[in-house]
Image (tube, rainbow, N blue to C red):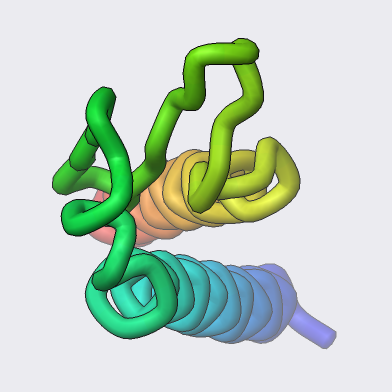
Length: 103
């Protein structure tokens, strides 16, 4: 394999990784929207201290005893932000390879 073929193969793998990470991001973002808009819709009627967030979508209630109901799990938030960061890192690598190819 020549250097150009190796670079093309690496570029294709990076584009594939970008697509996977963006897909994970939108899947988790959609899940958080469903949790906030569908599953936790009734929290507003029975909660005194309602918290809503728009990124990621969240609707949670803090009760008097300190418990929180309806909040996104750290795993869900970690997957959202982690996939966003990984997609950005892969896109940066794609841009660097393309810039090296242009020279």
